[in-house]
Image (cartoon, rainbow, N blue to C red; front, side):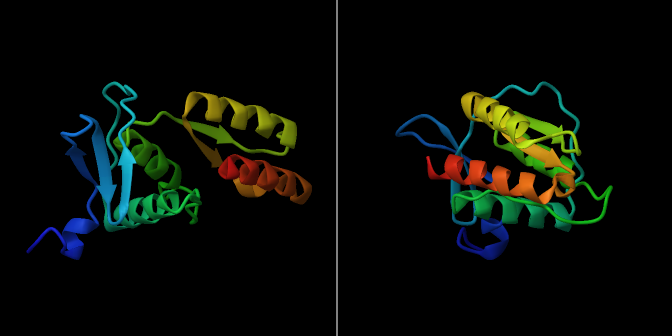
Length: 147
C-alpha cells in the first residue's frame, strides 16, 4: 500500500507542517487548518462506516466552499457526527434547535455570532422552518459564503 491508496486517503489525518509549524488535517483532497479550540475530555463517538462516509462528505463539501446537511431518520447520530468532526478539527460546534419560533432575524443573530467566533453551527430540525424563513435564511447563508 502507498499514501495514494484510497484506504489511506479517506482517513482523517493530522500533519504538522515544518514550514509554518501549524497542524493541518487532511482527508482526500481537502486540507484544513487545525483550530486548537480546547474541548476538554469530550465523549467519543463510535466510528462506523456511516460515520466515515459522513466525515468524507462533510469535508469534501467544506473543501468546495459549501456546508453540509446530513440527512436520515431521527436518532441515527447526525448531530453527534457533525459535533465529533468539529471536535476532530479543533472547532467549537454549537447546536441550535430550529422550531417554529425562530425567524430570519434570530438566524441572522446566530450567524453573526458564528462568523465572529469562528465556530460551527449545527441546526437541528432545520426542516421545521417555514418556506419564507428558509428563503431568507438561504440568502443570509449565501452572503456569508460569498464573503
